[in-house]
Image (tube, rainbow, N blue to C red; front, side, top):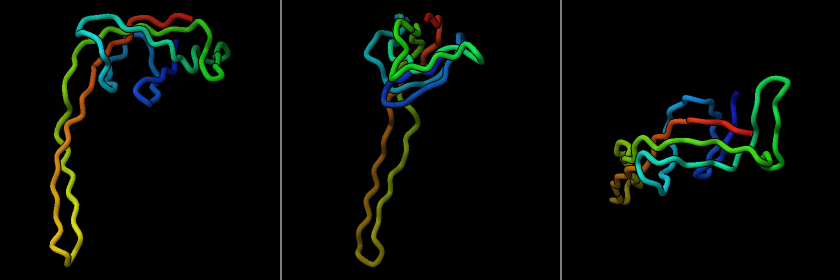
Length: 103
C-alpha cells in the first residue's frame, strides 16, 4: 500500500519500509512520529484521494538520524562591476523510516 504525505512543504510517495530524507523534524532520534497530512492512500482500484487530506489516515515513521547535507556553494557575480560574493549553505535534514500506514 502506498500513501502520499506532506511534510516540510513537500510531498512524498511512501510505502512501508521506505527510508528517505525530509526537512528537519523537531523530534529526538529513535522516536516515532505520526504524519496526519495524508493526501492519498491505497493503490489501484482502492485508491482514496483526499480533499485536501484523507480523513482518519495516518502514516507512522521512526527517525533514524538528524544531520546536515553536503555544502552547496552559492556564487554571485556581475561582470565588469567588480562584484563577487561566495556563500555556502548546509541544509538540515531528518532521515526517517516508514513503519506503518493506517487508514
